[in-house]
Picture 1: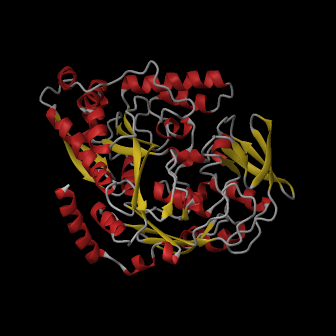
Picture 2 (picture 1 turned 90 degrees about the horizontal axis):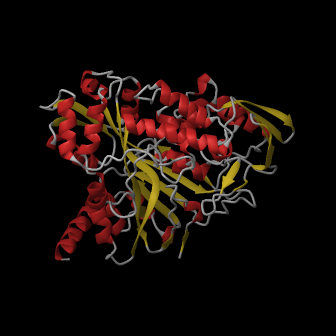
Length: 509
């Protein structure tokens, strides 16, 4: 305990040094919830970002057509008051009247049709195409009626309409373009963005004209300020001195220490986010050459003690994962999937069989959780694999990976909070730019599973795909991430497994 309070004193001193003018406006007194994270959203436009920070902002600023209750998983009306399937590839929706965008423009069926057609056009440059590539086109069939034509059967369509698919204002977007929209986005959600400074901060204010009856409810807190703060010690110090109100991704040891600090609440809960290693099984770079051999990829899986990392570095609340998905997603299963328990002796034997008894050198890329990446490098070194760490921003690694320049990629994925296996497995194994294995059999299974209406057949196809992925060890699942939140005790906040902090539901005590 003496050590903790000694460290606390250091952090309090640090806080005095790093405090910024914006910090003075945090807290209940000013009705301003200031929250921070270690990463910046790549773009405030939800379709042009796939970092969690951007997803969170998007859920506060934009509305979905359909609402999924996070507690029950049931779907209900949001911008669409009702919907019905005409056939397996045609969906009709009735658009709610009386909703206005933040700039005062009414939200109509025209905005819905334009948005859906825009995001599937080549000019849109959507980052995560799998979120929308099931849409063929949309058309207006009445003043408040929209028909969505699907590329093919896609049973998870409703889930996506309740998640990553949001609605933009047609007239405003066409006027300002994607660059202008990224700087000053306009949505119809419970909060509106009043200012945004790339890489630093985003300010949101309560939408006082938010529509009555929204399942999200009317927000209570007047202003939200998001700040980018890469250093964990600085985030902790700011929280303890009142500079910020809410932080997350708190390391296990700090979370334990903070639980003893007055006026701070600590909350831990499992999330859908899964950490994993993705291997260049095609051998697109010199550093990837050994990874073409399945025995080498399996050796890496046996070399890393996932359970120990989870227990000692990540913390309670997470689970070791054995399949390339989050275990609670529809279609995710680990039955019949090989389990690669920690076994360095077996790892060395497999390396020797593959002709690498003396080990080899390679490159490992990571964008977050440096301590976890370094731990994995330590485990690999113990069996003879010398992996050099390249720690970079996510967008840079993503583009390098898509260009075939990454050997081993330490990724995390929250599936855009979509509770369907297509949002995880399909992203990495359908032959798209993010597919590092390019296995035709896996691609066929995942594509067929994504478009199969028969539930039992769909589950079986996913199970076959997941077993094949694990047999070949194209992707090494690590564990689900628990989220350690720490926030001022003045705040009433509840965490959700989908890793979406819903500040529009939060309030001051």
